[in-house]
Picture (cartoon, rainbow, N blue to C red):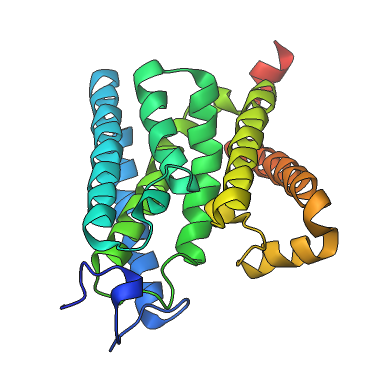
Length: 253
C-alpha cells in the first residue's frame, strides 16, 4: 500500500505488479463486467427524466475524474509533468467528448461516445498497456484505470441504445474528428518525444510499431488513418448487425 499513489517512475520495487491476463486482470474484467451490466440494466428501467439525470451524473463523474487524475499527476509525477497533463491521450479525449455529448446532445458527439468509447474502453480493459507491469495491483492508477474505462463502456452502451445513431452518415464527421485527434497527437509526439494516441516515433505498442516499421515515418500516419477508417467501418457494420439496424420498417420508409 506504500506505493498506492506513487507514479510508476518512482516505484522502487513491486511485490504484486499488475500483469496482463493474470488472475488479477481477469478478476478486474469480471468485476467491471458485473458492474456495467447492473448499472446498464438499472438505466433501462428509468424514465426519460431520470435517464437524463443519469447521463448528467456520468458527465460530471468524467470531468471530476479527469481533474483528480491531473491533480495526481501534478503531485506525484516529477519528470516533465507539463507534458504528462496534456489532454491528448485517447482516454482524456473521450472524457471531454462524453461530457460534451451529454450537455450538447449532438448526435455526432453521441456517435463518437458510442463507437469510439466502446472500442477504446473495451480494448484498454483487455490490453491495459498503460498500466501492465508499471503499477501494483492495488494502486490508484490501476483501480482508476478500470473504473474509468468501464465507465466508457457503460456510457457507450447507453448512447448505442438509441440505434438511430448507427446511421452511416455520422461516420464521416466522426472520422474527421478521429483524424484530427491522431494527427495532432502525432505532431506533438514528434516535437516532444511522447506517445500520445500510441503514435509516437517510434511507437511502443508492438502492433503499431510493426506498422511503423513496415511503412516508415512518412507513410506511417496515412497508414494509421487508413487503418482507423477500416476499423470504424467494421465496428459500425457489426453494431448494426447486433442491434438489428435498420429495422424492416425503417428500411422500407
